Length: 306
Image (cartoon, rainbow, N blue to C red; front, side, top):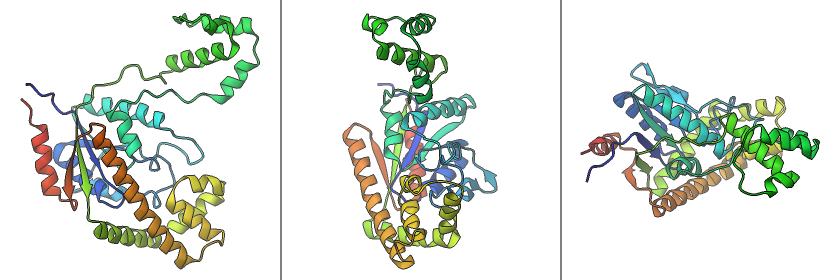
């Protein structure tokens, strides 16, 4: 049986497992490029709390090209659909350059959305939807007719909500926001894992270094730029707990202790998600303790094809 050639490498693992450094070294050795699968690293100005570690994308003096980092402002919404759409764009750009795409991150939902090919609808443009709701039925039918859609249900022409929904879908299609042409992915997936006590130690040490690097100042700066406490809370644990400290609801020592515990619990949830991915048919080759030599050996085997 002839196996398809792998056209995507995936490196996943819980927070603080060392994924980024491994992926950057692999990209250097394979002449590849990184695609980030991190739900928070897409946001500008959120560098310390999200662990972008941009310095790790320089290997032996060479800057490794990365994608889907710093592409949205913190007050903008960024969905799984947005990630999936932009992943396909980056994937095609990288493969067109005859380079190897390396998807790396800990956001299991993002990784799963491309490996399993989630069929996701585009986010509705609420302003456009309200504008359409103000129009008369006759005008709405004219707008919909201009797209010449193939409609099999007559209610799509007679019910206002259905007409508006179809217009929004057709407009999304014309604007390229509907994923109709997806590349075929042949992925080799590798997971980084640590013993529980080792990972807890890594989490604690990394948190300490992030606080020393200015995590509290970063969160305070985002707040002063106009982000609400609710919005900061939505960005995850570091921003949530530091916000509580800034509001005077937690003392500094208590904030650090509770945050370290919460990050450890997050790591457990990530590992649970990865096990679920395996149950759904995604084969993951596991690498213990961020062993780059072992990773490179397994990658070399995966890239061999009949």
